[in-house]
Length: 179
Image 1 (tube, rainbow, N blue to C red):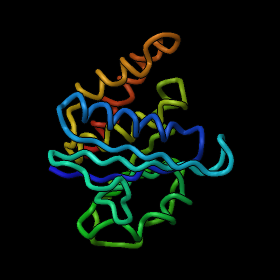
Image 2 (image 1 turned 45 degrees about the vertical axis):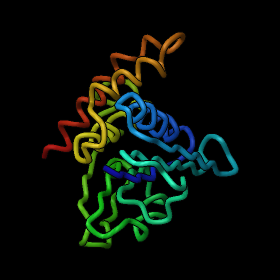
Image 3 (image 1 turned 180 degrees about the vertical axis):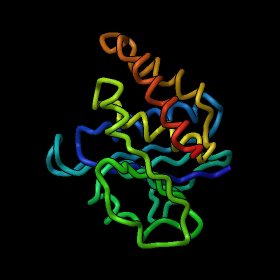
Image 4 (image 1 turned 120 degrees about the vertical axis):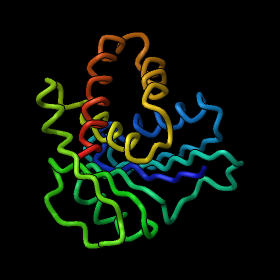
């Protein structure tokens, strides 16, 4: 098993949290992981992306120029990373903010109205969990229950009250990936 994913969007969309949750879930399942964040010049509103590798074998390098999958939360991220996805790869995209067509036809595309679902749940900040749920369902890289465990660890303390909301957003994302 070897999965490489780049997660990208604007700063403040929870890009790094998605990456941390995937990496931690991979560790909980006994897999080798690498997580490499990359920030734009601004913390909020600028670009942000991170790379996560989850593997049953040792990982030689955290650098991933051509990922198997990408999760993109905004149009600039789709423009930047679409051409780098490996043939037969996967794109999970936030359909609420990306209205353009994907130019390639050799990829599996899952369009998720993440912002719309998050608004229905009452908190726009869980849009990242909606796309993460779709990715986990479609890729099978880790189990959803393991993501829940990672979430409980990441949001322990002052953000503990957000755990159930985030779990619901993850579940809704998995449902959207089935369609």
